[in-house]
Length: 304
Image 1 (cartoon, one colour):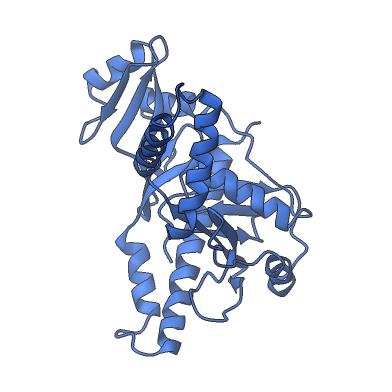
Image 2 (cartoon, rainbow, N blue to C red):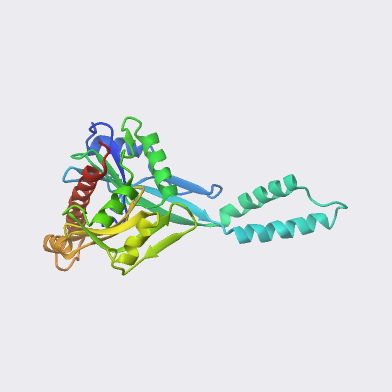
């Protein structure tokens, strides 16, 4: 259980539920397989992927949850092909063409006639609540999935209020660090960055394997470009890309973190108990690193 991307939310107040109480709320909207006649299904599932396992996995003052989404796969090309065939069939018996409204109605009819035959694709969104730091951290970089998760979480737990953190303009802060080589001691600026020209939104410069302190890179900042994302390593423990919307992507855990997980896990995982022990060790070590990383970043970027 290693998060590879993160979107962070703050709890407006300390959570009042323990794991058992939170689970009771999730059970009311637990996942059920998508019926044949519906295009999708959504609900809470076990984060450990075990049969009849709890919907909340609690360890080290963190509560891990999983939102499961099943969506029917129905390619638009198939719908267009069936619609074209149906229109041709109908118009061959009429003296006039089908109107736009009739086409839309036919398209809807075709869609719902094909849904029962479509395969379902499962997507799992993992998140954990850090009760110590009043954070909810979602393992996704997708805006669409984030909105789905937040909407369903609020529906399930209306008494747990979450909000995006109120931050300084990250592009300005990162540009200042790059111009003045003044990043905090805990952050090492790596060799990847994306510049966005504020005067020409179609001009985006993506840099990889570049010395960002070289004159050619610094000239981009003087030319009016903003830093829309930049790669960092935090305390020699986690390397990540930070976007100007405070999304963290491409998290890579360094050996100092991975070695801790190896030391806490069985050498050769064989039985169910050993797998559970490994899951617990990975989650505790991963979540401890991420929570500390996020709290450090929030200190740097939070509005005064």
